[in-house]
Amino acid sequence: MSYTKFTNCHLIDNGELYEFTDLYIDNNTMKIANKPRDPHQVTKTFDLHEHFIAPGFIDIQNNGIYGLNFSSLNENSTKEDIKDFQRFYRDAMTKYLSTGVTALCPTVTSNFPSVYTKVLPLYKKSRLSIQTDSLGAHLEGPFINLEKKGCHPPETFVDAKGGENKLLEVYGGKDNLLENVCIVTAAPEIPGVLELIPYVKQQNCVFAIGHTMADYQTGVEAIENGCTMITHLYNAMPQPHHRDAGVVGLINTPAVSPDKIPYFGLICDGVHIDPSMVNLAYKSNPSKCVLVTDAMHLIGLPDGEYKWDEQIIVKTGDRLYLKNTDTLAGAATTLPQCIRNLMKWAHIGLPEAVKAATNNPALSIGVEHEKGFLNVGCDADLVVLNKDGFVTKVYKLGNEIASSDIPQSSINRESKISAML
Image 1 (cartoon, rainbow, N blue to C red):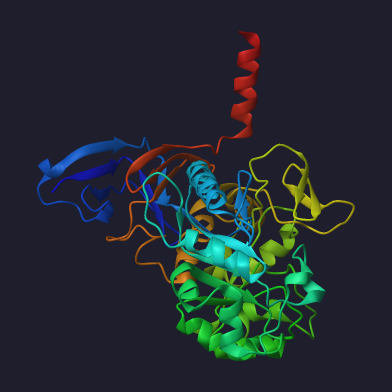
Image 2: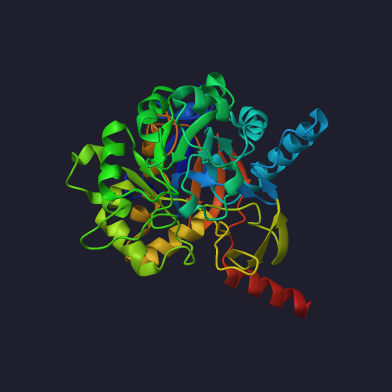
């Protein structure tokens, strides 16, 4: 038996700070371990110089990265197209790991059955040391409401009147759903959806409300049927009124027991939600808040106009809109930046903000015994942070990865130095 020791560091877990606490990794299993009885079993030691170490970040809603659209295969894709996509996928997931996200749910937006058949097997749950892991796909649609379609293509939308058979017909069969999917987002008011929630749960999938016109009572019924999540709170749903709370009112509803209150995704990019409304939602129920990027494939790419199916997306910094409209087309802000935004807007410390990108998402999808915590037995997927919340290093199953989460001030300083040379 041999172990790696992280020392001279502060641990962040459970929303708490554990100062000057060592962390041990079993070099055989690449899992977090107890302190070995024999100190000679420690074969490698990392001095973190009083930095903070936390579980790797988990992004449960992400539509694409570094030019890769997780939904881009279709019925016309050849075997060679699929091989090219797989290479692109591995490269993009390797790059994304450098942001501190060690696991994600590749999100497939509303599409035709042929797309789900082609892409979902590629998102089977993984455990790799050189790239961000897939935790299974997040299927956002196509059982959603036309009135809250966002940038989803309405020609793909369907109802669920056919029950289980319709669901499996759309998603490519029972095995495809059971083996390759983690989350299903649908609108409970669409005919047949409410009744399908227990079946979705039986396939070990999380059911989430999203892209919906559901009223508060329909939302409560969805929870009673097994719904445990709300997709990107505030966005693509009716806005709350003090006498008509809607779906937003579910995040702290007295209509169900506290243990049944759903988790809710929150996009803290400063574009999708005003900071004051981020603060309102987070403070309402911090233990259920899950930071998500809702990233589009344009994250990491230069500003400009990009074709997306039959539409054009305009990227300006972190802002993505459909051309000539005010319709948001996903996001382009990294998860560590969302953490820093939450710290600022909710006036909370680093441990509390990190919890919303580690512990909470792990609990929301039931992987807390493998990911998202620093508990013994969890994978050695770790991030090292400075006091400002910037990722300085990433460890994926103990493998050290350089960080791309660099403060803008550092980039500007390096540019000035280069200009002087």
